Amino acid sequence: MTPKGRRLSVYFVISLVITCRTIMHMFEGARAIDWVMLVIEALVLILIAYEVVIAHLDRRGARMRKQATDRRSEAIRELVSKGHVLLASAPRFGENDMIVAKWKDSLRDWNVEVQTLLKSYSSQALASYNQGIPKSASFPGLAAGNVQGDYSFLLMRLDNLQNIMEKPDVYY
Picture 1 (cartoon, rainbow, N blue to C red):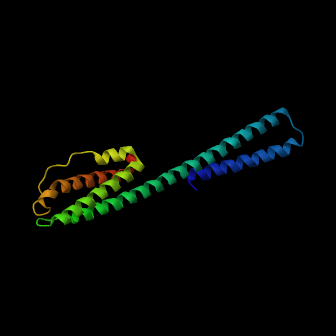
Picture 2: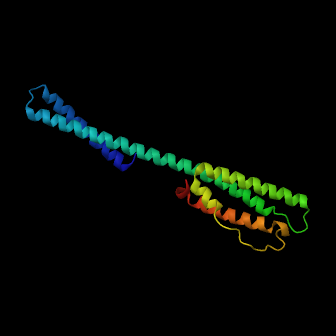
Picture 3: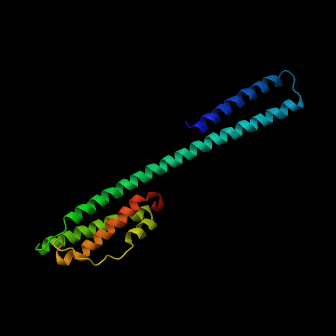
Protein backbone atom coordinates (compact mmCIF):
# COMPACT_ATOMS: atom_id res chain seq x y z
CA MET A 1 0.00 0.00 0.00
CA THR A 2 1.29 3.41 -0.90
CA PRO A 3 1.86 6.15 1.69
CA LYS A 4 -1.17 8.02 0.38
CA GLY A 5 -3.27 4.87 0.67
CA ARG A 6 -2.11 4.30 4.26
CA ARG A 7 -2.86 7.90 5.15
CA LEU A 8 -6.34 7.68 3.64
CA SER A 9 -6.97 4.41 5.50
CA VAL A 10 -5.97 6.06 8.79
CA TYR A 11 -8.31 9.00 8.05
CA PHE A 12 -11.08 6.56 7.24
CA VAL A 13 -10.64 4.66 10.52
CA ILE A 14 -10.51 7.88 12.56
CA SER A 15 -13.65 9.18 10.89
CA LEU A 16 -15.35 5.84 11.42
CA VAL A 17 -14.51 5.92 15.15
CA ILE A 18 -15.80 9.48 15.47
CA THR A 19 -18.97 8.56 13.58
CA CYS A 20 -19.58 5.52 15.82
CA ARG A 21 -19.04 7.70 18.89
CA THR A 22 -21.51 10.24 17.55
CA ILE A 23 -24.09 7.52 16.90
CA MET A 24 -23.67 6.26 20.49
CA HIS A 25 -24.31 9.80 21.79
CA MET A 26 -27.38 10.04 19.57
CA PHE A 27 -29.16 7.51 21.75
CA GLU A 28 -28.34 9.43 24.97
CA GLY A 29 -30.22 12.51 23.88
CA ALA A 30 -29.73 14.06 20.51
CA ARG A 31 -29.70 17.72 19.73
CA ALA A 32 -29.89 19.30 16.30
CA ILE A 33 -26.14 19.85 16.18
CA ASP A 34 -25.59 16.13 16.80
CA TRP A 35 -27.58 15.30 13.67
CA VAL A 36 -25.64 17.86 11.64
CA MET A 37 -22.34 16.42 12.88
CA LEU A 38 -23.51 12.90 12.00
CA VAL A 39 -24.32 13.98 8.42
CA ILE A 40 -20.99 15.80 8.07
CA GLU A 41 -19.04 12.80 9.37
CA ALA A 42 -20.90 10.46 7.02
CA LEU A 43 -20.07 12.73 4.08
CA VAL A 44 -16.40 12.77 5.11
CA LEU A 45 -16.40 8.96 5.29
CA ILE A 46 -17.95 8.73 1.83
CA LEU A 47 -15.37 11.16 0.42
CA ILE A 48 -12.45 9.24 1.92
CA ALA A 49 -13.84 5.91 0.66
CA TYR A 50 -14.21 7.45 -2.81
CA GLU A 51 -10.57 8.61 -2.77
CA VAL A 52 -9.36 5.14 -1.72
CA VAL A 53 -11.34 3.43 -4.48
CA ILE A 54 -10.20 5.89 -7.17
CA ALA A 55 -6.55 5.54 -6.12
CA HIS A 56 -6.85 1.74 -6.29
CA LEU A 57 -8.44 1.86 -9.74
CA ASP A 58 -5.75 4.23 -11.02
CA ARG A 59 -2.96 1.94 -9.82
CA ARG A 60 -4.71 -1.07 -11.32
CA GLY A 61 -5.14 0.68 -14.69
CA ALA A 62 -1.49 1.74 -14.77
CA ARG A 63 -0.36 -1.79 -13.90
CA MET A 64 -2.53 -3.33 -16.63
CA ARG A 65 -1.28 -0.81 -19.22
CA LYS A 66 2.33 -1.59 -18.31
CA GLN A 67 1.71 -5.32 -18.65
CA ALA A 68 0.11 -4.84 -22.08
CA THR A 69 2.98 -2.60 -23.19
CA ASP A 70 5.52 -5.16 -21.98
CA ARG A 71 3.76 -7.96 -23.90
CA ARG A 72 3.70 -5.87 -27.07
CA SER A 73 7.33 -4.86 -26.70
CA GLU A 74 8.30 -8.50 -26.29
CA ALA A 75 6.44 -9.43 -29.49
CA ILE A 76 8.23 -6.64 -31.38
CA ARG A 77 11.56 -7.74 -29.88
CA GLU A 78 10.98 -11.22 -31.32
CA LEU A 79 10.26 -9.74 -34.75
CA VAL A 80 13.43 -7.63 -34.56
CA SER A 81 15.35 -10.84 -33.79
CA LYS A 82 13.82 -12.54 -36.82
CA GLY A 83 14.77 -9.50 -38.90
CA HIS A 84 18.37 -9.71 -37.74
CA VAL A 85 18.43 -13.39 -38.66
CA LEU A 86 17.20 -12.41 -42.13
CA LEU A 87 19.88 -9.74 -42.30
CA ALA A 88 22.58 -12.22 -41.39
CA SER A 89 21.31 -14.76 -43.92
CA ALA A 90 21.23 -12.35 -46.89
CA PRO A 91 22.47 -14.06 -50.03
CA ARG A 92 26.09 -13.31 -50.90
CA PHE A 93 27.60 -12.81 -54.30
CA GLY A 94 27.57 -15.98 -56.31
CA GLU A 95 24.50 -17.53 -54.60
CA ASN A 96 22.10 -19.27 -56.97
CA ASP A 97 18.74 -17.77 -57.87
CA MET A 98 16.79 -20.31 -55.82
CA ILE A 99 18.47 -19.21 -52.59
CA VAL A 100 17.90 -15.55 -53.49
CA ALA A 101 14.20 -16.21 -54.22
CA LYS A 102 13.81 -18.11 -50.94
CA TRP A 103 15.41 -15.24 -49.00
CA LYS A 104 13.17 -12.69 -50.72
CA ASP A 105 10.11 -14.80 -49.83
CA SER A 106 11.28 -14.94 -46.21
CA LEU A 107 11.73 -11.16 -46.22
CA ARG A 108 8.24 -10.66 -47.66
CA ASP A 109 6.70 -13.04 -45.05
CA TRP A 110 8.54 -11.26 -42.24
CA ASN A 111 7.37 -7.87 -43.50
CA VAL A 112 3.73 -9.06 -43.67
CA GLU A 113 4.01 -10.51 -40.15
CA VAL A 114 5.37 -7.21 -38.79
CA GLN A 115 2.70 -5.16 -40.55
CA THR A 116 -0.10 -7.42 -39.30
CA LEU A 117 1.15 -7.17 -35.72
CA LEU A 118 1.65 -3.41 -35.81
CA LYS A 119 -1.75 -2.87 -37.42
CA SER A 120 -3.33 -4.77 -34.52
CA TYR A 121 -1.54 -2.42 -32.08
CA SER A 122 -2.16 0.96 -33.74
CA SER A 123 -2.29 2.63 -37.10
CA GLN A 124 0.35 5.09 -35.86
CA ALA A 125 2.83 2.26 -35.25
CA LEU A 126 2.14 0.83 -38.71
CA ALA A 127 2.57 4.23 -40.35
CA SER A 128 5.85 4.79 -38.55
CA TYR A 129 7.09 1.37 -39.62
CA ASN A 130 6.19 2.00 -43.27
CA GLN A 131 7.74 5.48 -43.24
CA GLY A 132 10.84 6.16 -45.28
CA ILE A 133 12.38 5.31 -48.58
CA PRO A 134 15.18 2.77 -48.64
CA LYS A 135 18.48 4.46 -49.35
CA SER A 136 20.26 3.27 -52.42
CA ALA A 137 23.44 2.00 -50.94
CA SER A 138 25.87 -0.60 -52.07
CA PHE A 139 26.83 -3.47 -49.83
CA PRO A 140 29.74 -5.00 -51.72
CA GLY A 141 30.29 -8.62 -50.88
CA LEU A 142 27.50 -8.61 -48.31
CA ALA A 143 24.58 -9.12 -50.63
CA ALA A 144 24.11 -10.32 -54.15
CA GLY A 145 23.55 -7.56 -56.68
CA ASN A 146 19.85 -8.26 -57.22
CA VAL A 147 19.25 -8.25 -53.44
CA GLN A 148 20.85 -4.87 -52.69
CA GLY A 149 17.50 -3.02 -52.68
CA ASP A 150 15.85 -5.64 -50.47
CA TYR A 151 18.80 -5.56 -48.09
CA SER A 152 18.53 -1.78 -47.83
CA PHE A 153 14.74 -2.12 -47.32
CA LEU A 154 15.32 -4.58 -44.47
CA LEU A 155 17.84 -2.28 -42.78
CA MET A 156 15.38 0.64 -42.92
CA ARG A 157 12.47 -1.45 -41.61
CA LEU A 158 14.56 -2.82 -38.77
CA ASP A 159 15.55 0.71 -37.82
CA ASN A 160 11.89 1.81 -37.86
CA LEU A 161 10.89 -1.21 -35.77
CA GLN A 162 13.64 -0.44 -33.27
CA ASN A 163 12.37 3.14 -32.95
CA ILE A 164 8.84 1.86 -32.28
CA MET A 165 10.12 -0.55 -29.66
CA GLU A 166 12.09 2.18 -27.86
CA LYS A 167 8.98 4.41 -27.48
CA PRO A 168 6.12 2.03 -26.64
CA ASP A 169 3.94 4.63 -24.92
CA VAL A 170 3.84 6.72 -28.09
CA TYR A 171 2.73 3.96 -30.42
CA TYR A 172 0.40 1.74 -28.38
